[in-house]
Length: 88
Image (cartoon, rainbow, N blue to C red; front, side, top):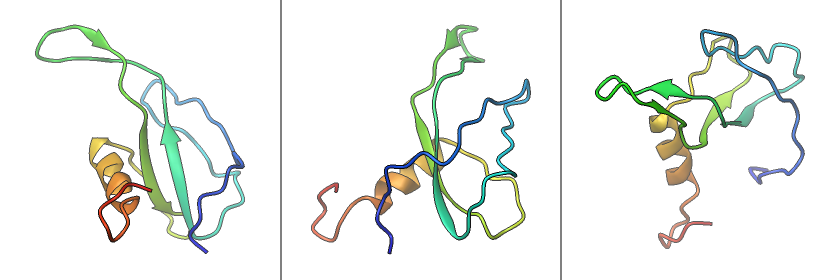
């Protein structure tokens, strides 16, 4: 029905390449994936930073590896805006 549930279906830790395996999670259709923690090195400054939480809406029926990025977070935020322009 498109409403956001509160149940966490799975948690996973990424490997050294930043990849998480959710192949054992029984999902069908769309799912909201939320990523938090970790760190990266800013190429411009050499400083180690912690990114903000990022999310993506993925189609679990497609055999592909989803990528969660700042752009997918923007897409999720856009999807959360209702017709009046207010964030829900």
